[in-house]
Amino acid sequence: MAQSVGAYQKCINPACGAEFDVAESIFKCPQCGDLLDIQYNWDKIKVPDKFAVFGKRWAKRDKPLDFSGVWRFRELLNFCPDKNKVTIGEGQTILQQNRAIAEHLGMKPEGLFLQYEGLNPSGSFKDNGMAAAFSHAMMVGAKSCACASTGNTSASVALYAHSCGLKCTVFIGSGRIAFGKLSQAMDYGAQTIQIQGDFDDCMKQVQAVCVELGLYLLNSLNPFRLEGQKTIMYRIIEALGWDVPDWIIVPGGNLGNSSAFGKAFLELKQLGLIDRVPRLAIVNATGADTLTDLVNNKKLAWNGGHVNRKIIDDYYADLTARHFSPHTCASAIEISRPVNLKKCLRAIDVCNGVVLAMTDQEILDAKALIGKHGLGCEPASAATIAGLKHLLANGTVAKDQRVACVLTGHTLKDANATVNYHKDKQGPFSNPPVEAPNDLQEIIKLIR
Ligand SMILES: *Cc1c(COP(=O)(O)O)cnc(C)c1O
Ligand SMILES: [Zn+2]
Image (cartoon, rainbow, N blue to C red; front, side):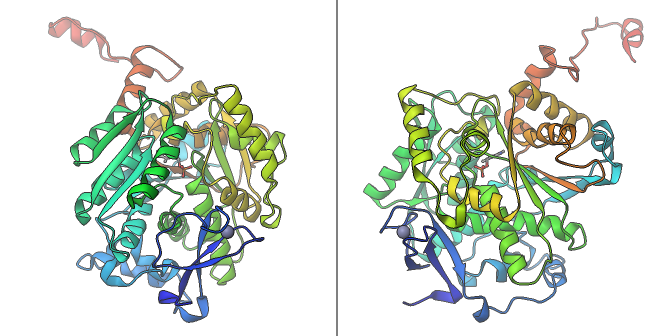
């Protein structure tokens, strides 16, 4: 089979293992319906043997593909020619050591790092994935695209679609989207269809619509998106002088990020660019904890790719029978049937991972803590610090380990959550405004 630029698509089901050209846009294995992976013929790709090569490119601000935080690592996601590569300046994100939060959590002050992916063009990590997926869309000549979204995917898709000249339709659940995110989809010119249902309903409908109308699908079911999201890990270890931390902590929704991170480390290890793999902690909200329940209670595991499908099917049948709909203030992870579940199990296997679920109160308190001592973030992102607190308390993470938390979305995405926390005095970090008469002496008395 023709395999463009050293890459091909491969079904992750070992009983199938079907391979397809990267020039096809299929999103699921046409033979068995399982997820697809992008695989590389590494011997045909000239991968720099030193990480520093990627870092040096960043200085070239006049070369968009070198400056892109995704494409400067292009040899590690080498599936499309340069002429199709899309960038709008994604991935200019920073890893920030945060001593204050570390001390608050009782960790060694040098040990905690926050990777703020809210600094992307559309305000979330999704842009890393979209730079890659839209490049693939250009490569296959797509004209229209679509996605289902809890919010940030729609904002990112709308932004990239506009810059690539693609028509775009986004599907959102009714009443389930943070205002900042909805404002972006509308502002960037996407057709926004609000379905009476939740994210899982949207995800099902969008797949059918894409097949029916031949639209290019941009959910993380699209394996090219995950290739772009690998670069978040490259940037973290780059910022640590090409050293891996002991732990990566990430919120878990549709499980695209966690899947991509596991794949990134697996490949770097195979290429000999790193000699050890960090551990991965994936944090759900208790109101949307399918992964946690399946892994911790039902003992679902990767098992060399032979995942016990019956456990998943029974679990989902029960959700359906109970008319279960997930509920959490962390709207970005309000998902009960995560499409990348199997790939995430692989990531847990590769990274000796753990999963856990935190309550909305714990998430909101963690968000306020990050706001007070960091750059802020939206609720889903704060699940990382909430989870870290828990993992420190039960001894899974040691106080002197190095931990990098991925803050997935910008604090202004969900300003309502922040305002309500402070104004309604929802937790220990609430900091509401103080009312004052229009009188200098009275105002001075109030200053603390
Ligand atoms: C999409 C999103 C998530 C969930 O990521 P998955 O890859 O779907 O697990 C978490 N946080 C934010 C801010 C998001 O936009
Ligand atoms: Zn297959």
